[in-house]
Length: 170
Image 1 (tube, rainbow, N blue to C red):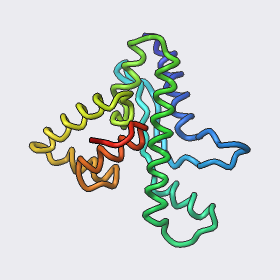
Image 2: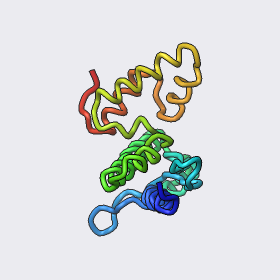
Image 3: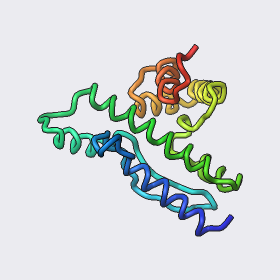
């Protein structure tokens, strides 16, 4: 794999995560994804980011003319939009790439792999594996609960189905 090309992929995805495509004449949502770093490491494309960054949410809240702390509903909206945007950025780049090694190096170390499945059955398998691991390693469930603002794996599954456009989770 060409290291320069991999870095360019990281640069473009990292930039896309920070700058969402506005609707219409620029009156669309603003991404609250914080990209702290993008690079290549161990032949993988690494894009370190977090969705619904608290500082960016507060900045957006203030920019909208609101005072005080952002509401939980607003935070949830930012998280939902950011998750859809993250998914779109990654899947769009994966569609463009025609080298399977580079695709793998982008997808496997992704910060939010749960957003990158194209089929519900793949997402279900991923979540079932994490659910089993959480029985031994409680940090899996705690990490998902904190990251996605949900209480359990069933709520997480429903949310990820909605974000991914899969319809209702069974």
